[in-house]
Length: 320
Image (tube, rainbow, N blue to C red; front, side, top):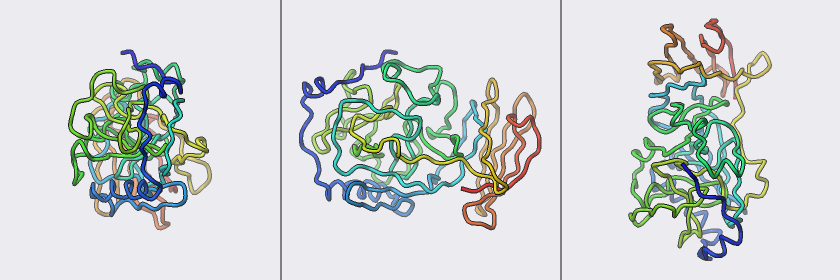
């Protein structure tokens, strides 16, 4: 699949993006309203300072997780406090920005990544489908469009279908998330319900918008969701990341390694007392990752038997 080539400043000018953009206060209100109208204001706190709207959450959605994953990385979702900064005075740059971490956040507080699982893309890679790193093709995602990453944090790599089903205002006009450059993210269609014509979306999966100046979309085909940022982002390298869990005895948790060929029958179970269990099989043998809240806030007691660790039974306390 051939992707659109990155757009230059000259090309942006030729397209004549609307100059209309919301004022600072109105942009803050629009971000807050997108969360409240979707019904997630109990899970996500929105605050605004001089430059940003901050969406603070624990990145842990109230919907099914991990079901349907075959290409498991043997990481498990663990709550992680996360503050997502959305610029209140967005400005288009025409120079696509990429990173190997979140590019934005959904209105339920879950971070949004690009569609790949192979790290930051180069400018050339943005313009062509990275099939070998496509998290859908490699079966790394659950039925809701997400999975747990290196930080044992849950995030989306494609359309967050389960979140959209939960939204009180679900529909084409609903904002489903915000990119860190300050522009909104919509679903597969235009906000007025009309279809998006082939070739309309640029390399970042965005187009002009009469209200915000620019907007991103999800799409049925790759790149599925925001894959780069078309707006200016001061301090781009300082955007938030979820750190891997740290052992109370010192050091961090080792990253999981995807078992060759994938796993079978992966099930993630959540209980009211906060205990979690991810059980699966590999080459006919049973494996698991289980954890429960520890006595210290933000810490969890783990018991694991994974392919990564050669089926060795391990236990320990890890903290955010």
